[in-house]
Length: 195
Image 1 (cartoon, one colour):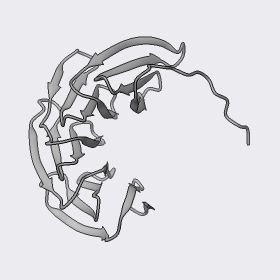
Image 2 (cartoon, helix red, strand yellow):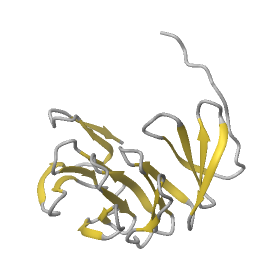
Image 3 (cartoon, one colour):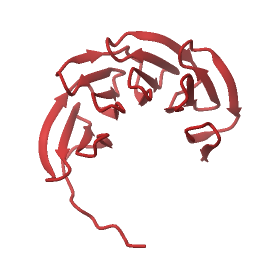
């Protein structure tokens, strides 16, 4: 097996909390502590553009169709940018840090989780909150299944499955401390990482 080689480094002299590669593989999005998302062209490793919002950016996510990028901040804000038409939308605000965001497979919804013990389901087209899910503790990791209505969110103490259309809890899978959860496309396997 060939060992990967370092291609380049970027120094922003400020903490970087998250990086993401666009679905088309052409751009790198760098979430910075100063509220900026810096885009780098991967082919040339050159600066493309920046987006700006409030607070230090903890997490970013591209929509699967590549139309949107969203960011969650340490001030609880969720911001959406439409990369095709330039629209900027604000979603519901958490009362504290946003730890995780994830787009639905069809790019129409975004789930966010934070230190306020809430997960918010948001309609991407207008930033409206569809529903919220309450937890006993922080919501630190979330992921959608590829099934139409399945959402598998990681919650600080328990892993639960909700119907994303209604917010109804379907089942609890684990009752111990996990740091992340991933599921296979057909729900045939779930992978947990214990601390």
